[in-house]
Amino acid sequence: SGDSKAERESDLRAANDESELAAEEKKGKKKSGFRGVVIGDEGMEGNFNITRVSFMLFRVMRQYGLYSLIDCPCSTTLSWMPQLVARLDMELPGFMYTCVLLDQKELDPVRKQFHRYFEPDVIVDPLTEEVARNKLFPSGDLVFTWNAIQHLDMRVSWKIIKLARLRSKFLLLSSNPGFNNLHIILTGSNQATGFLNVRKQPLMLSDPDKVIGNLSYGLPYKQMLLLYETKKLKRTVGRF
Image (cartoon, rainbow, N blue to C red; front, top):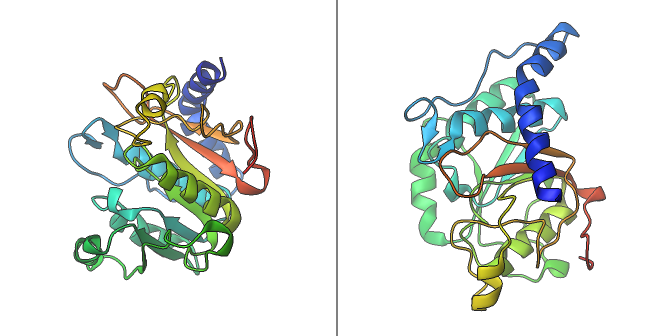
């Protein structure tokens, strides 16, 4: 299936990460020395290898020449994103970071976590406007959403994906290959409860440009990052 193929490809690419990095550095690309935010027990936070998640986001920004990052919602990355943003700010000239929040009450924790590292632009609840007329959601090079759509109402997740497609060059989001979304659909609640597969009904996103694996452990469905160049992002069934 497409999902199992994605998993196989992600495992292969994960195994090749270090050799690809070595090749880039051999070609004369500036060596960073950064290998991810050090957090928790051996980089783990719960079931997730956050050191690897942060490193791969850092690497995508450098590899694709991206200078502005929209973190939506940034409430799911607060334990490590401030350190990563500080590093990106040091390495990428003109770097810009925007924190998108879905709830006003999350504003104080964001300011508290970031104050030692970076002063982010913060936009609160930009999803209230319809997608076609939305002037609140920011524009930038990359929209990043980690472990958020796995816990949101799918209608909110769909709006984030549609806005990212309109306002950014790339979308990097977490997904759970192998999960079929059926329990979300059958309950009629639209509420994800820990897992969501963006390539299955009702979202049906097309093949990603890049699959990043080895990010989760001990979960019934692996959590991966899928990278899309938004101008090529389509649905396998239906339209946006």
